[in-house]
Length: 275
Image (cartoon, rainbow, N blue to C red; front, side):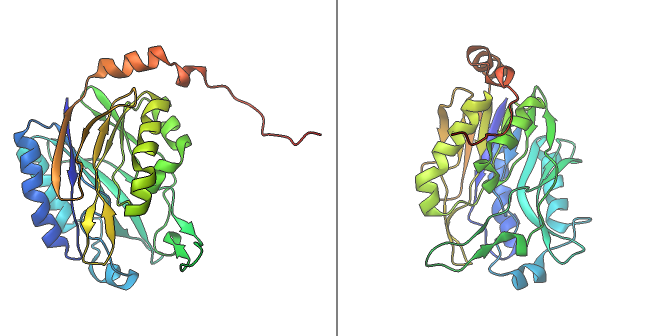
């Protein structure tokens, strides 16, 4: 199966972001992709919570999602919207990933579980949980001969999620992201290769890249990694583009036969201080 990672530089206007996405999906389809993944915050990359509240649309009858569903049907392709903000009743948002099938029907959705809350020396505290509400369940979905495992950006730092997805049958792990440049240079390749190696799975990571209208800069470098941890395709820049790679289900079976880490995992008691 051929898959495509769509790299974007999303801004503050959902319709402009959709207009930028359409030719990229067409290019993926022309190259034979059966599945296309877009980045985190595909439809809007907000400047502030107030700006997000002014433009984020309800999930039901969402105008950009309705058009993306049409594009999935037009191209006879699975289209996976890496994420978009969805208003919730408590005033916060879900950071939601949505998969459409080749018939244009919604196949699955996932709300980002791990939220970045941190106090960083010399910087203001960052509280993603003040704007977003964390999801509570892991999600998989069928993609022809593959089973897709969902995640979003910061999730990639939590191996237990990917272990859970792989044990539930996932052999292709999706990681849409909007990584900053410093953390991207330091951690992007290492973390994604580790998630592939420890689960014996393919990893596809679609990234935001470049300087955005909200003032942020993101790393780009969308990737596809094989179950042995090799980078088999990469956009080696931060500009919009399409990355296509072909996946072989036998590569998953072979990696898991050679290193049966999922089968060999053991339960154990929490550590106890001795001495």
